[in-house]
Image (cartoon, rainbow over all chains, first blue to last red; front, top):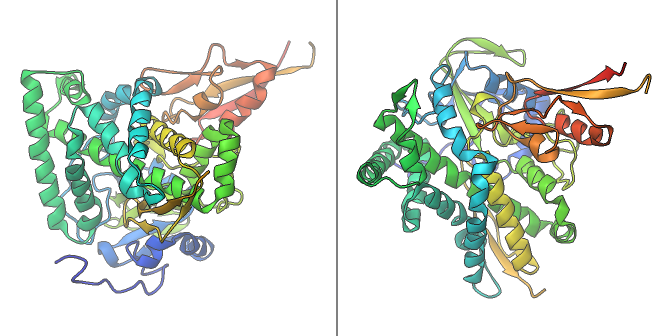
Length: 397
Length: 74
């Protein structure tokens, strides 16, 4: 059964029956979160076999930093609890987490990522070269291709497999919330795909990321292949959907706020703070934790066995942390946004994502004349929120 | 300069998660290790003309890992 045959009952109220798949939530969550912050900063639902939703920055940070009560073995809230599928380091808790994180980090430092910038720019330019005149769906023709091509290049995978990658991601992160068979089938397909890629590199190693990760040691022993495959699944999933969403949300904002687009064109030196501000305002990723010990957050009891959504997007709109949180202020000076998470699970690809987002926005602003929305934006539902359809018109100059 | 104060940067290695916001905002005041975690560059003393940059780095660290303390000059 898919979610289409089985429409979900709408949430009765957000404090005791929230559902982040409810279309009111996915279309415009910000007023809902603002209401919860004032009335019930730790919401709960019996859906998803029990789940909490903290809407404040402080509660989100406290949970992200407490790995004793909040485990990463499950990081996606689904209707049913499927067996954990290890994808280290994101699904690892201490002490297993650290060696995996440290094995991945050297490949994602700012210095390691910088050489990818010219290729990223070339990818963006080539996509814009192929735009239909007058306008197009920018999600279809631009945003969704950029991270796929960059990560495929990094990992040494064929760019033409992009449709396959996007289908797996859609099945695991979106359809899989209500239909767990999709998670199982997509995970199995990915396992077989990466096992084949690994076999090829065992005989003919290259200098791509997969070849390098095959040589890593964990606690002074060669990493097990099944675990490396888990890590590769993570890098592919986390490297595509997230950045695609961040680029799309940034371009949607600029299309809806032409004064901001004009300001960035006139004052390109604002780009670094503007990118951080767009990440704050439209952070795409909501993670989750599984509660493994009773505790208390924001003065509310938390019971083991529940899941808890870790909404970095909601934390980023908390007025206790950010003045005028619902306004995009391109030169916001103080910005401790949590778009890449907080604590030990800080996104390993944050430098890559920032580079791709900056290059994609810069290139678009530079190449595409006055752009406006030409129809409704359609947002992805669930773990990663970003525009899946972004129809725009491009007026002359 | 009797009575003047200089600022001392400290990055708490237990808190730093390698967000790199400090390095982006004040590249001369911070350095990164091979995994991307930050520490104060050199002695961590902030030249007066860089004090504003140092404050920005503090105000943008999502982990509250950076502290700035005034050191009384002898």
